Length: 142
Image (cartoon, rainbow, N blue to C red; front, side):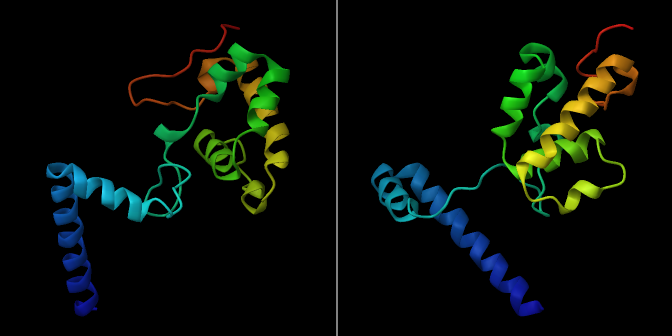
């Protein structure tokens, strides 16, 4: 275990040194970009466990209100499974957690649409708080 920690510390120092040199030397930065270009890019910001955070999630209530139901469905179909799972988790759309096993984006669309519609009908008191100080977005007053 101690060897692994030492190796991690050494690798962090090496990466810091490379970043520092890339900031100072543009030719070095270009060569580094050329070397790292073939590596796959991450699909989104993730926490240590590979899950997107609440700040990374789009505001589905605002999207629904600005797009309307049909356009909202098309927009949801364009999102990846990781983002859709994050939306369901952050907003508490699936308390029974059945959707955790789903791997197809198509299965999430009806769940998210129905939950957003239901919560907007009920009002802002039933929406998930996005900020500690208040509710975002404000739903229609009913």
